[in-house]
Image 1 (cartoon, rainbow, N blue to C red):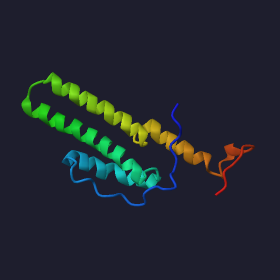
Image 2: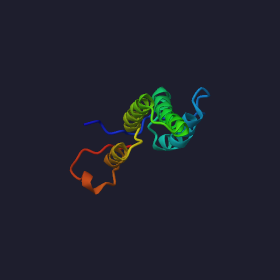
Image 3: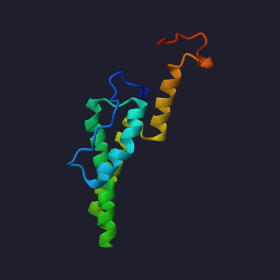
Image 4: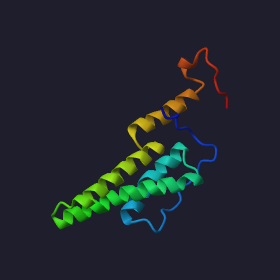
Length: 128
């Protein structure tokens, strides 16, 4: 079982601009996900490379889809590359709380630190 994702004391307060070298689809994904990651306080400067990799994988999925649709043919090599990019994106999404299950881990981590949680009776509580 993976540990819960929690707020990081070194979390970025503002989303940096998308790297210029990313494809348009990857830049769009960066702009779509970064505000939520920043808001949840789980992304540090050191995490940006992994977030960039996630965006690159998602962008590649979209680029390959465009190529497959425009060709009108099924290219199994491209289909395999797209499948690999989807797997990579899914794995990285889980690392950053971008899937429903990993978002639940973020939510449960926040609840554990909440002194007002009635389920915390009798347990050691963290105080701010």
